[in-house]
Amino acid sequence: MKRIIAIVAGGDSSEHDVSMKSAEGIYSFIDKETYKVYTIELGHKGWNAILEDGSKSTVDKNDFSFMENGQKIKPDFAYITIHGTPGENGILQGYFELLGIPYSTCDVLVSALTFNKFMTNQYLKSFGIRIAESMLVHKRNGISDEEVIEKIGLPCFIKPNASGSSFGVTKVKTKEQIQPALQAAFAESDDAMIEAYMDGIELANGCYKTQDKSVVLPITEVVSKNEFFDFNAKYNGQVTEITPARLSPELTGRVQKLTSAIYDILGCKGLVRVDYIITEGEKINLLEINTTPGMTATSFIPQQARAAGINMEEIMTDIIEDNFSE
Image: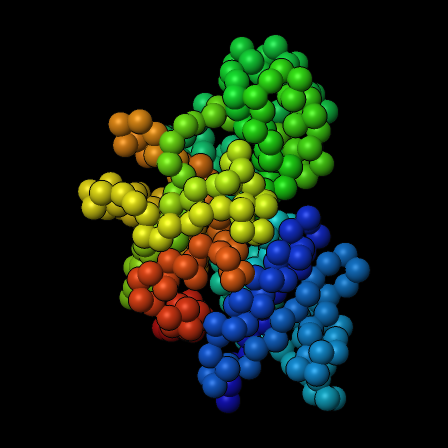
């Protein structure tokens, strides 16, 4: 009998539509001969399973089941691909833990930690990992332009501290841009992270591990046509993505080794993407960790898998079956 896989998508953040596109990608990657696959769309308006005929069936939150043709369907595994709340910050992970349903991502603690960019970077800094100078500002407190310039300097980035993508992120080059940038960040998160600008090569590196595999994918070099790798660059093609990245074998190895180490330090699970900036002197600086990375047609992970000669179907099977192996 086929295991039932629920691709959990949607969510309540600005990234709802991106999440639904990721769900389409994941659906195409999962082996339908082995698994029965449904997409379940979550949101404040309701939880609905999308059935084969395109109709929707309300999900019973008591046990994560739904009805199809008079039969109760209860998923065996949840593949979470929500970018933002509640799928990237530990909330859904806690729900599935309570129900005893295995899921694809990091656990509650790691999901909550990595969703908080500032806390994650400060934690990893204690392990000797290089990060940009940064500060955290809560929206009820605010901060003056002068203090931002004094403590961080210009240019800088102002971004939501707890958010899954590039909404609300601004590259600030002048004093006059600081307050509008803070307001844009606060629209997505109660806290804003103000981070010093680093000039260098931006990289993205995917990784996943199971009980018997440790896979660090090829690195992607990100050359944005915009000021930085913003939403349009990420999802609307305003970027050149080079996989494998144009790095020396030595630097490639260092980045991949660091990705694997970060995965282990945090205790990650499933597919994770780590983003970096390489600054002068080939210094590797951490930007952030993505524990539910995008899986759309333009996303990094599928590109990196292709460059490695790995079929995405194989990766999906590895991640699913790792939860059922003894």
